[in-house]
Amino acid sequence: MIPAVPLPKGSKVRTPVDLKLKRKWRFDTRRRVFLSDSGEEFAPYGELPKNSRIVYKVPSLAEADESKLSRSEKDLRYYMQVILPTKESPADYVSVIGAWPCVEEAHVAPEVSLPGLA
Image (cartoon, rainbow, N blue to C red; front, side, top):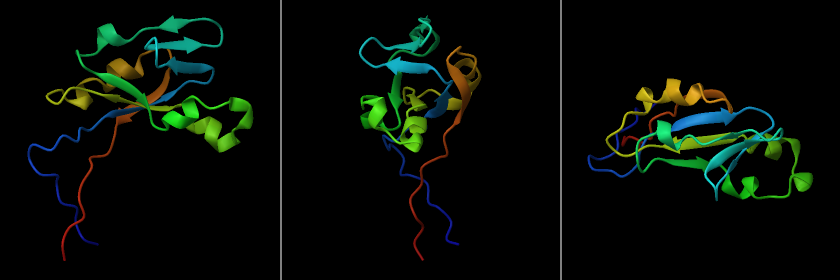
């Protein structure tokens, strides 16, 4: 196997915190809050550094009509990423994000790399 090559210095690619929502929770991208089917709300931005973003891994599924989605597509709707500012370490925020009432699990995403040259 060819070892991976790190991204060039100054690359704008950041390593996010991956998370999976608990069942019956979703993220309202317009209001930037998590909502549960029972009416609970959770706004996480006071717990994250300024300019952090929370995004769905598959944004098109988040907005899709749930009745038209397969079981696998419905499951994919629970996966999200927290993208932190460049100078912030994702490892420093995993426990904070994992403690949110809407999060089932959280971890630092694998580092992105380029294929090595033979």
